[in-house]
Structure formats: C-alpha cells, structure tokens
Picture 1 (cartoon, helix red, strand yellow):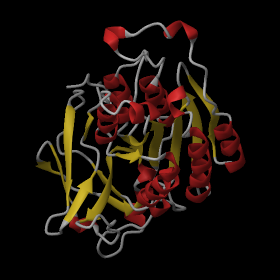
Picture 2: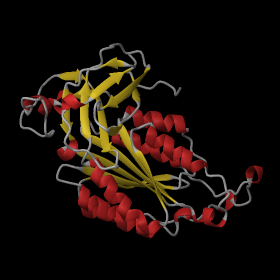
Picture 3: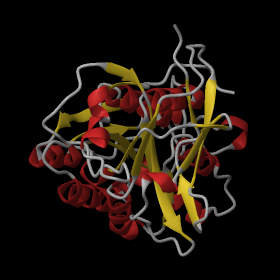
Picture 4: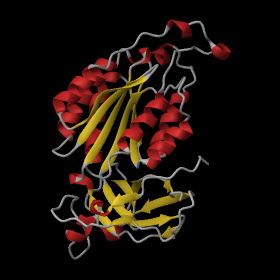
Length: 329
C-alpha cells in the first residue's frame, strides 16, 4: 500500500451548496454556480463518476437515488449530487517533449489547442507544462485561450543530453531522461491550489519514465491528495514499430496513474488520431456526476479508505477513483 498522505477532502461548503439550493423534489442539483453561499466549512469527500451503458455510451440521465456509494464496504449517504456540465474546471496539460514524441508533437499541439478552445468556458482555467530531462511550466494558470495557445506552441522536442548516450543498463536501450513522475507530481501540486470544481491532468506521453526524483507512489499520492483525475494519451513510440518485441513498461505506468485517480488511458496509433481522443475526453469531462458525502467513519488517522460507486438495477459500468487517504491530525 502506498504511503499514507492526506487527500484534499476539506472543501469549502459552497462546492456543494447548490446541491441544496437547487434541489428539486428528487434532491437532484443541476450545477455548482449560485449567488448564495454558506459561510461554514464542512468535511466532504468528493467523487466524480463516469457512467456508461453496455454499448459504451455515456449515461447522462441518472438521479441521486440511482447511485449507491460505499466507503470500506459501509454505505454512505450521498448528500450532494450534480452533473458536472457547468462545474468549474481546472485543467493541466503535460506534454512529453522527448525525442520519442518527435513525430507526434505537431499533431498533439494542434489538437490540444482545439481541445482547450472547445472545452474551456468562462470561469475555467488551465496551465501547460512540458517534461523530458526537466519539468517546466510553459504557461501558468489562466483562462485566456491565446495565452494557453502560446504556451503550447513553446513545447519543442529537446535534444538528447550527450552524457546519457553511452549508457545501456542491462543491455536495454537508453532513451535519455523522461521525468514523467516529476511532471505528475508538480502538476498535481499546482492543481491542489484550486479549491473547487473538477481538477484534471491530461498527459501526452508513451509512459516511459527515467530519472525522476519522484517515485510513482509519490506522484500518485500527490494526485490523490489534490483530487486530480488523470487522463493519459499514450502516443506510440516509433521505436516500438521497429522493435515490436521491446518491453513496454510505460503502458502499465499509465494504467496505474489513470486507475488510481478515476481517469482513463487512450492508446493512440497513429498520432493523427489524437484529435478524436481529445474530443472523447471533452465529452466525458462534461458528462460526469459529482457525488459528495460526509464519511460515516470519522477520524483523522491517515488510513486509505476504499470507495465503490455502483448503479444497482441498471446495466451500466461506473468509473470513479478507488479511494482516498484520510487526513492526519
């Protein structure tokens, strides 16, 4: 089990106040924004869920009563509920600029700019970073689309540091520094500053990692603590077309990042299909359900609490984060 770190579960009550203010007879809320606010702070665990039918289509017409949520197998009362169509969104875009992405990068950049133009609405914000031998923020958090486009345009393939070329540990091909875990860690910490709404990290990479100071465990802990959902766009490394039997540890890494945060991995081959993946992510982000609850089991012991979300009686699958770390006093 990963090292216990406290997640961000202390939310200002206004995250959920519209679930009360706008609730109808069935207790369902339609959005987050309202002119009224509550002045108190409450401890709420927030869970975002994506629901699909057997054919893989998004299900958008569910009510709060349709959901069943448990924490460590104990049923929880879903006090706050809404669809995230109008939820504030804070998004990080992390772009792999190592030589492995040389062919894919131009397509990725154009698709990313189109994605942000279509997705972001007034009040939403995003920032852009790239990673390779280092992690660098190209555009800090903003809602200005032109600034974000300029940040994306700054992403360029870096030259492979000469000092890593001779190294071939255990006969493996040494492709140079790929600081993926450092990028996830830094992006999660930046996203943690956002107190409300949906927080999403989209990573464009083949999943190869080398040289990060941060471990996979620490990167995941940071994402969980910040309530970040990670979407990974796995763009095939051209090296695998030449050497198809080459081990692919990157795929397992991306699967763990997505699974541990309630996100998803998209495997892109060839690179020109990247825009369609961005379209699917955008549709999914605006079709999630927000479920908020105050845990039956109280206490700040730092333990990992397992969450399960179901829709009993309906032929649906639900994807949500598997749990969270309780805070430590």
